[in-house]
Structures are given as C-alpha cells and as structure tokens.
Image (cartoon, rainbow, N blue to C red; front, side, top):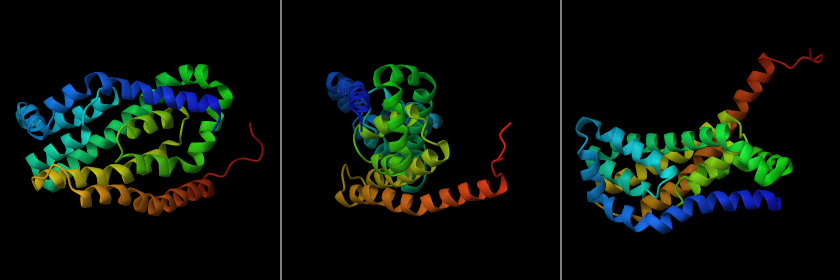
Amino acid sequence: MSRSLILLTLLLLAGIIIPFMIWGERFDAALSLDGSRAWMAAYGDWAWLAGVLLMVADIVLPVPSTIVMSALGLMYGWLVGGLIAAAGSFLSGIVAYLMCSWLGRPAARWIAGEDGLLKGEELFAIHGGWLVAVSRWMPVLPEAVACLAGLVRMPKRVFIFALACGSLPVGFAFAAIGALGNTSSSAAIALSAVLPAVLWFVARFLVRKLERNEEENHPKSEFPK
C-alpha cells in the first residue's frame, strides 16, 4: 500500500474517531440499551425506521450501532429485530459507499493522487470482499472500509454481496443479544465475527459465476467502436 493511500486511510479513520473522542461518552450514555429503546419507542409504529436511520447516522456521528441493534432485538424479537438491524447495517454501508463514490473522489485524488487511488483499486479488487464482509462486526472500521470502497470505486456487485455477508450475521447476533436481555455475549460476538468470512467464502463463487455468465452472454467486441 502506498504512503498516499495510507494517509487517506488515516484521514478517514481520524474523521470517524475524532467525533467519538468528543461526543462518544454522551452518545453512549444517551443510547444505552434502555435509552435506545426509549428513543425509538417515542416514534411509535415508526420505531424500526428510527433505529435504521440511527445506524445510518453512525457514518458521521458516534452512534453505538451494536447497542441500537440489541435494542431492536429487545423491541421486536431476534427475528424481526435481526432483519431490521441487518437492514440498518446494510443501508449504512450503502450510503457510505455511494456518498464517497459521488462526493469524495476528487478530494481523495487530491490527497492520495491518481497513483494512490489506482493502488487502492487494486487492493479492493483482490481483497475488497473480505475487508467489507469481516469489518462489519468491528468498531469504527465498517464506516472507514465502506468509504474507502466507494472512493476507489470497488465493483458495486462485489461490494453489495460482501456487505450483505457482513451485515446479516451482525444484525441477527446483536438483536439476539437484546432479545435475550443480555448486554453482551461472547458467543454471539464470536459468531458475528466468523460468519461473515464463511458467507463471503461461499458468496464470492456466486459473484464469479455471475460475472462469467455475463461475459459469455455479452462478449466484448474485438473491434471497439
């Protein structure tokens, strides 16, 4: 990885970590398990949407997403709460990817240079699926990795599949923690860390198969127009 790309990564991490350092304790206090549940419950039938939007806000604010996921499990049960939590994690990744893909690339090119972005594209072309899938259960990294994926224009299909592989286990694991009335569970956390890698190991074969089918059905012309 080039120095310029490392600098870009560090700047992204700083943009995420600094708000945690400034407001993290306030958000953690306000959005405890009971606090998150009460905040979402205030929106009545739209409590689930409030939870999803809260997780999307984690892109720029120090929102404790895993606590919000647990609160959704406490409110809706592990199945429905898990689906909502997974959807929130997935949507958060999509928004970060699109936002950086559309708005952040000129700034990224200025910071990292064209060579840095090309090296980033190479990195995410080879290892991007693993990075996106596995990062979803970690603190801070989900937002940074999704933003980097958007900046270097990681293929959308690969990103979406990898994001789903990471978001589903995390959403259901933490919703189950909330539904069971636990604030933490080493088994659930370990499962949410291992399953994304397993799912992506399987999903990447599907992605490659789809790509091969497209190449066979729409072969590139030997004589470009």
